[in-house]
Length: 477
Ligand code: SAH
Image (cartoon, rainbow, N blue to C red; front, side, top):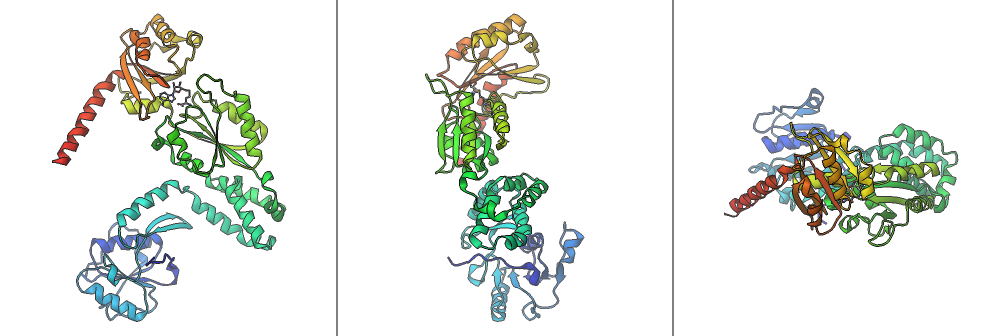
C-alpha cells in the first residue's frame, strides 16, 4: 500500500487550492460539498465560480499574490493543478513546509491523493486504487453505494448520541461492544434505517438494564423476519434492499419458484431451507411454514422469507405477516418485481398504452374450477389488459370464460414462460388459440397476458433486436 487512507479534519484550517480551469473548479466543488474552507490562488486571474450558493461562496477566500511565496501558515493541505512547472514547484514548496500536497494527475509530485467517496453523512467510505484508475474506483463506489443503506449515516449519528451515557452505564468494554452490536443488528437499528429514529430513541431509552440487555443469551435476542420479493428469476432484478437482506440473512426459507441465480446472491454461510412445493411432492403447507419462520426468529436469527416475484401478489405474504404479528415477531416486507411485470418488460408488452389499454387486472386461475369461479363478465373491456398467474392448466377454461363473456376470439394473447431467465420462452397469438399456445411452451412457470397490447410484443422485439445488432455492426466497423 503506497497511500494510507486517513481522514482530514476540515475544521482545523483551510485547504490551499492553486490554479484555474475546469479541473480546479471541480475540486473546488468537491471541497465545498465536503464542508472545507478553501484559500484559492486562481493563477489565471479568473476566480469566478458559477452555481454555488452564498454560504459556499463565504467558504472561499481568495489568495493574494504568488502561491509559491505566499504565507501558507494555518493551511492544512495543498491542492494544485498539474499544468506546467507550477505543480512541481508547488509540490516542493508544500513539502518544504511539511504540508500534504496533491498535484492533479501527477502522482510523482503528490504526497496524497483523493479517493472516490461514498458520503452518507457521518459514514464516509474512501476508495483508492493507488492513483492507478479513477474509473475502477468509481465502479467500486457504485457498488458500495448500492449495498449501503441510505440512512447508515443516521445510524452512526444515533449511536454517537448515546455513546457517552451508555459508556457511563456499562463499564466493561466487551459488554459495551456487545450492547452496540445488538442495537445495530436488532430492531432498534432497523428502526433508524427505516427513518423512524424517534421510535428507536424511545426504545433505547426504555432499556432499563443495558448490561443485562447486552449480556442476554443469543437465544433471547430478538430475531426478525424479512419477507423478500425475489423477482421472476433474473438476479439483477432484485432490489437493492432485497440484496442487502440476502447478504444479511442467517437463514433463508425459499419457495420452489426462486431461481438458483437469486439464491447465489445470498450470504454464503446463510442456511437455506426449501419450503415450496416440489414437482410431484406437496409442499409442507402454509401453517408449517409460518411455524418455521416463528421458531427461527425466536432463536434470534435474521430470517429471510424469500418468495418468487412479489410477496404480496399471489404469494401468501399477507397470511405470513398475519401469523408473525400474532406471534409478536418483528417483520418487514421488501417488494419484488412480480412475474407479470418481468414478463411484460422482457417481451415488450406495454401493459398500459394510450388509447389501447387503460386498466390492468392481475388474476390467478390454477385449476379449471378456479377459472369457472372468475366473473369473466367484469373482464370484457377491450381496453383492459388481463395478466393471469398459474393459468397454464386452466387455459381452456380461461378461453371459454372470456369468449362466453363476449371478449373477441381475435384478442391478442401471449404465453410467457420462465420470464427473465436464461431459458425464457414466449409465444403469442389469438385468444381462440390460447390452449394451443400453452401446449407450445416447454413447461412453466408461465404468465398469460391477454389484451390488444400483446400484439406489439413480437414486432417491437424484432425491431429492437435489429437496431441493437446494427449498432454493434457500426461499432465493429
Ligand atoms: N408472487 C409471485 C407469483 C406466485 S404465483 C409473483 O409475484 O410473481 C406463481 C405463478 O407466478 C406461476 O404459476 C406463474 O404464473 C408465475 N411466475 C412466476 N415466475 C415466473 C416466471 N419467471 N415466468 C413466468 N411466470 C412466472
